[in-house]
Amino acid sequence: MTLITDTTAVLLYLILLIGAIYKFSELKFVAPFFKYLPPVIWVYFLPMISSNIGIIPRDHELYLWIRTYLLPTALVLMLLSANVPALAKLGGKAILTVLAGTLGIALGAIVSFSIFQFWLPEDAWTGIGALSGSWIGGSANMVAVATSIGTPEAMLGPIIVVDTVIGYSWMGVVIALSVFQNRLDEKNKVDRTIVESLNTRMKDLYDAKRRPLKYIDLITMLSVGFGVGYAMVNLGEWMPDVGAVLTSFGWAIILSSLVGVALSFTRLSELEFAGASSVGNFFFYLLLATIGARADLAGILDAPVFLLAGALIIIIHATVLFLGGKLLKAPMFLIATASQANIGGPITAPIVATVYQGSLAPVGLLMAVVCSISGTFVALMVAQICFWITQL
Image 1: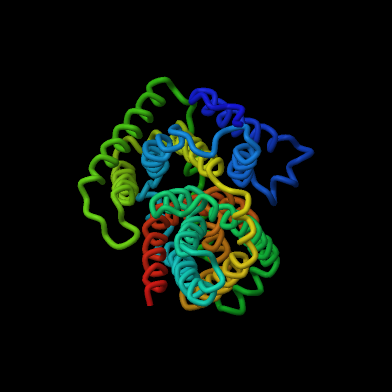
Image 2: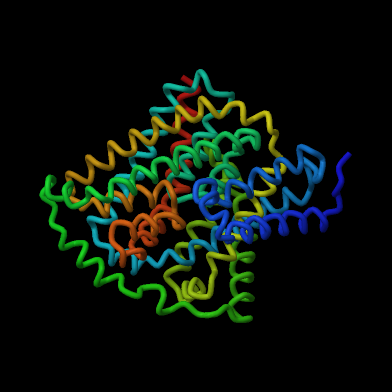
């Protein structure tokens, strides 16, 4: 018997649960705990536990509505902050370093899946696609890809375990390497003037333009986000299915992403300074909570093999990134930040950037934006290639 079944009550429960998780994570005495088990993992697992013990239902019409309309809306709001002119200020070397990290994740995912597919569950290609999305830009891309290609809810449990355990372990390695950055740069004969140049370009890039959220800002965000999202969902139904990945909803995801990037060239991009991406993030977390609610705890048993697959992806990512960085003569600061921009996304990339260069957190944020733009598309391609591998 399920305790809460009313639609409004289920929605309220999920909203309060997300709010409680983030409020609790801000308490000083639990900060170290949430450093290694971030709020996003609890946004998935606590609803899963709630549905498995009968507090909320495993299946509900609310979950489908949130999946169909909040995801495209969230993508539009998140990508309003793409700020392509600002990205151009990073320079070619910085962007190429980020793309080398992205190539490493994509290549690693394909190679890893080819090796471990026989020990992974059926449809594991959808899980590897979702993990690729998470490791090219962060959790938002994971949700977008997983929802687009129909990753089973039970499979997302192991994927989030891998994302957390392997991803944060790698972040620890990247941070530890910061003490050797000068030595490594000297060994690779790197010109460190690029770091000084970036420092000048990025100074007060975002903070100077931040403003409180106004009523008109919120109305505009919701109108643009839901308007574009709804239109793209309906347009996607007119598009043909392509392979195993591009279904009608997959088209809606891609079209919403493209429109979001296009709108970032307009004055609507200024909504980011009032918190557009924060509103989009909340929609993502609400969607992630409903995905968790539909999952089965038994799926976590698949985590060990996924952990091995994830570790191999990181090894290949690091190899490609360091080789690319050496060819580009990129400083260790750019290599480390590019890696975290891919694997951690906009939340942790500025942290790593600050560890290496105290005043260059905006560089980490902009690098993560590059990954946020490309992550969904690259991960969808990875998923399609992995699907083809299963047909061989």
